[in-house]
Image (cartoon, rainbow, N blue to C red; front, side, top):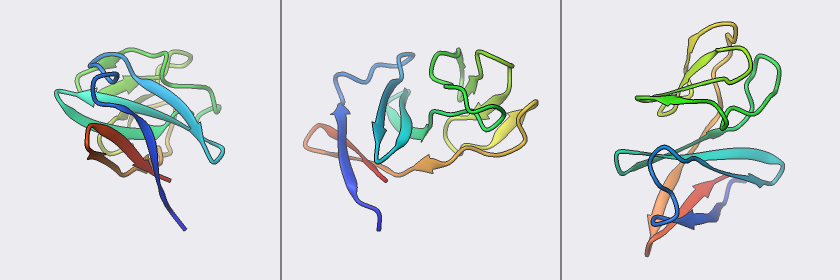
Length: 102
């Protein structure tokens, strides 16, 4: 069963600076894209390495290790060497607190 977890405040999640936390064993990266918040699993399906250190270009994150690209909004892989999409997590804001459903 999924539940909502407090992740961080809106003020702490600035554009271009993902916030990473592990919740129930899931490494999750939270992104602020022009005031909209998105959460993806912070693990490249190509080799399981963290994505959050990679550059963000528009709505995409680039794996800093092998160059795979993913849409932050949908988790969809947009360039190899990865071929599996990323898990995404629902995000909501309650009284200034960003919550993620895991």
